Amino acid sequence: MKNLVLAFAMALASVSLLSAPALRAQDNSGQITISNPAEFNAYQNAITQTDPKAKAAALEDFLKTYPQSVVKKAVLDQLIDTYQQLNDQDQALSAATRLLQLDPTNPKAILISVYIKKNECQKSIDATGESKDPQTCDDAAALAQKGLTAPNPAGTSDEDWKKMTDVSYPIFDSAIALDDAVSKKDYAGAIDEYKKELMLYPANQTTAGNGLVDTLNLAEAYAKPGPARNEVDACWFYARAWNFAPAAYKAQIEPKLEYWYKRYHGNLDGLDAVKSASAGTVFPPSSFSIAPAPTPPEIVHNVLATTPDLTKLNLEDKEFILANGTKDDAQKLWSVLQNQMTPVPGIVIDDPADVLKVSVTTTREVKPKDYIVHLTTPAACSAVPLPPTDLHIKEAQSYILSNGVKADTDAMGDALTATTGIRRIVIDPSVSVIKMAVTQDAKDSKTPDFIVNMKAPVSCKDAPAPGFAFNLQPADELDATYNSYTPLPATSTRTATAQIVLSDGFIQAEKKAAPVHRRPRRTGE
Image 1 (cartoon, rainbow, N blue to C red):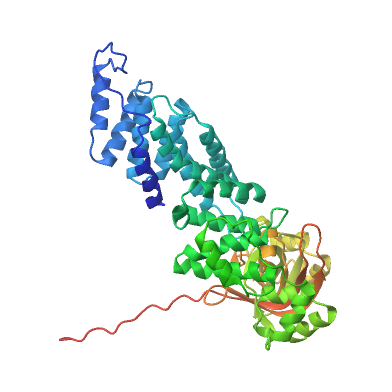
Image 2: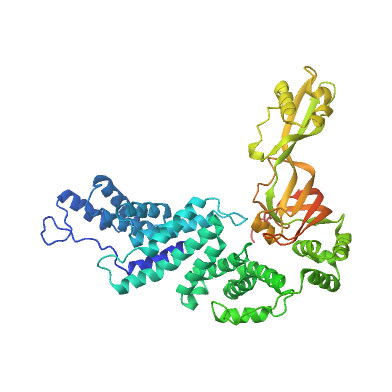
């Protein structure tokens, strides 16, 4: 972020949008005049500081001492630059906000505000692609809209104004597009804004930096569910992003490119030609096309016929086969999968606390007796009432009776009615089912397609929160055994899918890298 901020700050420096006024103790020339010598000296002292920290402090002190100064705009403008030098984005935003209160269409203040708020919006995006701070995203977009219509400031040449807008307008379009995508879920709007942005860049500026990032974001927007989805254009922009991405990011982009190309075309034949074509131009030519794939049942039949080991298929392909294959083809795969264990990489959609793990220790027995009590009303772990501590026996009994299913509380017998003979009752709200989104469609729609019934309930203290991403070891991994599946036909808003139920689930915690132990040197080595 620092390099990007400095890059456009340097561009701003070449554009004199708000020059520091010439100051004189007494002057009738029409220039801004500070008539108070003490105020004049304080201003001179602040703007001539060479250390950025000292300058920022001096400028802030000036504003506190002279809040109505005629040079307040100039001081705030210099504060923006100084905080940028310090890479203090919070204070730079504060200065820009204060300047906008005085000058609502100040282009520099709008640009700084949009850029910083856009980055804050970006940081708020969770694993599902949704912003956890939509207000910040909306604020960035609203300021960006204002920036696109802000007038050329008086005294600014057309040449300088063009320099400014060449920097700012792509950032404004990008902020509006990001808000559309992650806050409003208006993917058609996001596509339109990302295209406007990329059209403003020279072609070479789309191969790195924000231009490259938003080429990838445009591909993602084209791949989202809904009427704006265009798999052909998604493949083009994924391919273009892949062409210019650093090596570490190519490995993340290529699976998406191959997924969408294969989903539309049926196989990877011809993908290299798309990669080559997209390297030469930002937007696909009007003649660009990708031959559509055979029908889903035909694709399934061909995959089954040409895949020697069906267990090697990834989970998305397995689900596609179970959802779209004929009954015989789906059963052919299921006969291989059923009762087999598999990792379940994906996003946690829902895992409410639905049971209480209860441990009762009596005076008659050394070992505690364990029970599982289903909750009458499952709720998010954070919303489950805090159970009493283990030594508050009467309160613990009441808690279980109030919240537990009657059949389970009845099965506990005297443990919930006895007034003596019980030493402790430990209650642990827990999760017995984790609902996962594995395919991209499921992640985009935040709809679970894999239901994992845990072998043993997971304490809320250890359960993953919705939005958590399970991967493969050495990362946190969720494993379970195929139990059953139900094909779900396509609707007007959803492609055909399958809901797959797994049993005996368990979590393998992330494996931390072992510390490196070095042999101590011997004397004389």
